[in-house]
Structure formats: structure tokens, C-alpha cells
Length: 343
Image (cartoon, rainbow, N blue to C red; front, side):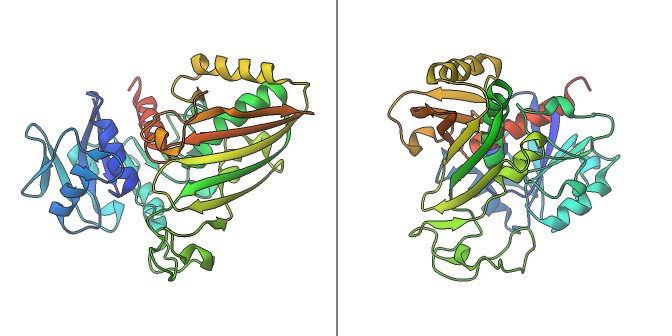
């Protein structure tokens, strides 16, 4: 049994909780969130506009959430270091708050819990290692790596494909455009774009403050820089950008790759099909006429859409899909299970 604490009970924290409840070996025993209303925390856990009603409903009793069989202690501390994780028996804390100060304070938990996983891609000097499960989990030094970044959804989706194609065909150059649904810090109506990472700060990318439900917002992306933290051989080979799109869930990525080896479409299709057995739950192939909503709650890291797969003159054109919450959180769960394996 792995005892888990969740710091920051937003979109990722709540999805992590739902996925953990599907595995009898995972036990959420503590939640910390700045929301002071525990009844609202329970409500948001039970009802979700994207994923529907919760399978195992939670009620409030004293300062805890319960499903009638077990209790989850709830705290409302702004700082991760103020929660008595070790006293509660937590093995791994998942910091899904997105707050930079919590990342820095996580080091104070060393020796008290086994690991802290942060669900974003901070500067490399701030964490012991960046791990994308399905790409480089074998690089973990379980003795010394304490604070681990589980990267971002875009990198979790792109890195497995990049690793596969680079190994088979040698990527020389690439272009990536991601289409990402709106996030919580965006606005319904035009206004300043407020930072989650640094509360009180306003982003200087003013376009991110525009109405999220009615606009396509072009923006820079960290998808390639995050990918290159685990695949350094791809540094300086890619140009990338992103759009924030007016949908609530499921991202897509449009990649163009120039490879060194001679390649035809049949070669690529065979490699991608073989990858399903080599990388279960990481890469999946789709041949049906599907749209974004058909990929809601898919737990694969990435789904390659073969309808738009093209190869010509050493170039690969590839469209992929990924549930930026459920798919991403599934890999975070895989990572924490990998960290605790054998302990």
C-alpha cells in the first residue's frame, strides 16, 4: 500500500485522486488546499463537469473526507511545509499546486517522506530530476533523487514519439504546434492574466488574458524545452508554438519531423504499431474518424491519428491526441508506483 498526500486539489489533484481510487494499492490519506471550505472540496471531488460524478462519493466528517470506510485528513495551509505529512504516514507527496514557493519548500520534507513529485516542468536546478514515465524512468536514482518533476502534459505526449522516431530514423529537425484547452488561470472575459505559480503576479503575455471561451490564443510553449530535459539529443533541433483553444479538455499536437534515414509510410506505420506492445499505456494508434471529445478520459500518454500520418522526402507529418488531465495524471500515478516499487 502506498500512502499518498496531495498538495493542491485543483484539476490535476482531483483527477489523481479519482485514478488512485481505482487501484487498491494506492491510498490517498491527506489533502492540502488553500480553499478554506471543506464542503466545497468534497463537492468538487464528487462532481466534475468533464468526467462526471465520482464513483466513490466523499462526505465531510469533522476535518476529514470519508467514503464511509476510510478517512482523508484535509488541511488548508498555503505552504506545503506546514502540513504534517510524515506524522500522517505519507510516503509520497504530489505537489499539484503549481505554486513556485511550494516547490522550493518541498526540500524541507526530505527525510520525512520518500519523495515529492511536482506536476510541472520547473528549472532543472530546482529539482533532482525530470522524469517522463515511459521515456526515462530508468534514470531515477532512488537513493538520491528526492524532488522529481513529472514534466507537463505536452511533453508526456510528445517525448515518447520523439524518442521512438529518433531511435528508429534519426531526427534532424522538427516543428511542433500544440493545441491546448483553456486553463484555470485564463479568463472568461478580457482582463489581466493572473499567474498560478506566483500568486499576485500578472503575466506580461497580455493575450493570455483575453476571453478563453471565444478566442484562439497563440502563445509560446515549453513543450520542447520540457521534452529536451529527458531527450537532450534533441536540443536546438525544434521550433514550436502553441494555441490555447476554446475547449475544456483534450489536447492535440501537429508535428513535422525531418529524419536522416530513408523512410516510407509502411515503415513508420509498422514501428508505431509495434510500439503499442513495447510501450503499453504510452503510445496508442487510432484509425477511426474521431474528434477531440472521443479521447476524453483516455489514459494513454499519446494517441497517433493515422488518418493524417504522411511521409514524403524524408519528412514525417503526424497528428496526435492526448487527454491533458487524465492521460497526464495516469503517468504521474505510474511514476509514484515506480518510485515505491521494491521499498
